Length: 217
Image (cartoon, rainbow, N blue to C red; front, side, top):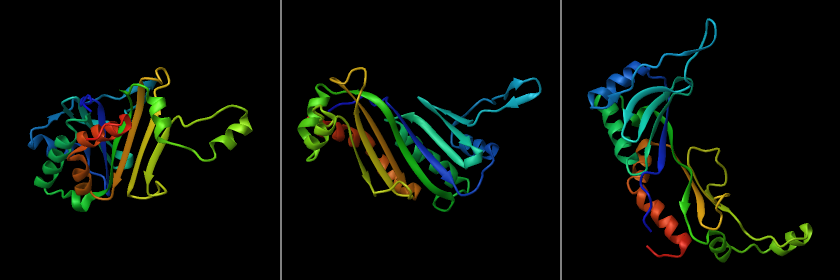
C-alpha cells in the first residue's frame, strides 16, 4: 500500500550533557548543513523578553533541527522519506567533530505524530479484526451495542523505560469511515538502534497500513 512519504516524522535525541548551540551549529555547518538564522527573543511586556523554547540550529529539506537546552534535547523534524538520511548525517557530523553519540546520547525517540491516512471502511475493518469477549457485558451496562472503534499496541507494558514502542489507530473523527489517524512512537536507548529502526521506516508504515486493509505485503 503506497503512502505519502512527505508525512511528518521526527527524532528526539536526549543528550547526557548540554552542548552549547553555537558549537552544534559549527559541527553541523562543517558537514554542509544550512545553519538557521538567529532568532531574536520577543518582548511579552516592556523590558521582559521571552525566547523560543526550542532554538533553531539548522534548516533542512521539509523541516528543521532545533535544540531545547533545558532538556539537553536535539530534535530533528522532517518528512518520513528524509528522516533516516538526515538522522544519519547528523550522527556523522558529530562523530567527525569528536562528539561520539555512542557516549553522549541518553536515549532517543522517533515520533510519527497523529496524521490522517486514507483508509476506506476503516471502522468496519477494525471491527472485523478485533473482537472483545466482554463487549456484550459492557454494552448491557450502558444499554447500547458497543464495538471496537480504536486500538493500540505497545511493548513493554510501561513507557517508563528507555525502550518503548507504541502504535495507535484511531478513525479520523471528521471522516471515520474513510480515514485513520496512525501514531507511532519508538524509543531506543542508543542512537545506533534508532538508525536501524529508521532504515526502512517507510516500508514499516506501508506494511502496517497494508495489514489494516487486509493486503499482504
